[in-house]
Length: 441
Image (cartoon, rainbow, N blue to C red):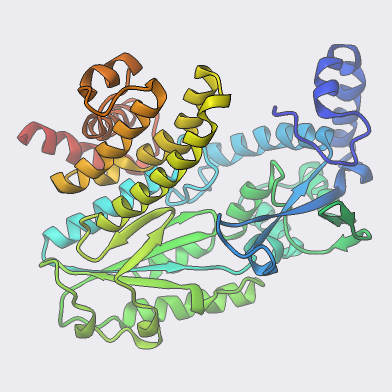
């Protein structure tokens, strides 16, 4: 486990890990007592909230732009990790989790979610359908969860009862928190709702809480994919077909969310319409009250999608952010060792070029050359090479694949994982499609 804990920890987590061989029996006694007595120690249920910006560049004085991260005692995370492992095993055995939920699950990622949704959209467009994609935004979803409803989910959906269920009741009971910001701290306040953001169990508990949502989408025959509280729903239709099914589905989702103390933020809900002939077809469809939310470009889990699906907006955003970071790194180059400089470039440049790059397969040569220019600039910065030097030997010396080959490698890697049961079940279909495409090439 990472040595992260709470400012209230008596022993710093790093020191605790070093002396753990000496105190392991005492820690084991605390863990086993908690599990057998179905009681979570009171000290484990107090969090220090340290707000962080949801996205870089947002106004830090606007509190709605801050995400309340809960810093819990290190030993409480050890206890949660043990419970998490047992709970995941139980959920996997009875196959209760939604297969279209990719948030915080093993072998799942934002990229596997993108691959599935992109594949569905392309297949629909190739069949002559229009596709309406809606990104639903939930307001403070983790903070408004009702504990009684969640306990009911444990019992009715996950088959948890007896001492195990009593342990979760104790976990939610008498929780408290205080806010620490800029060296100042508030008084402790009770937390009667929500699951801690920053805890081990929090994301899994949220996924359990919203399990019934999938049944609503399936009832209306609307495709969907979830990444924790980020919800993508998409509906294929002919130009003359009504979107009433989609509108009815969203209205029922809103009602379910309200009944479960969650709120759908209409003002932040994004919508985009894809047309098989790469032209805007929004005017042909009556999108009801969602019409003001229609955009030509939307940001979906960090990837910008345009109506023509040429991915130009994503490439523009990647190039802009990478060159901004390269300018900042160049100012620090003289004080960084080669090893640290490589790490910085990997963190701020390569990670951006590789993020969900399987969605960039088939983009134009012009867009691809712009991404390659970013990689070339990063390689020259790292090696100190002159602009007139040929880039291929430089990339080879760094063991860097060019951008085009990185995209192909990512697709082949996803395909390999799909065929060897190292990827989510739902990526198998796109993997087969990829094999066919590569064979045709």
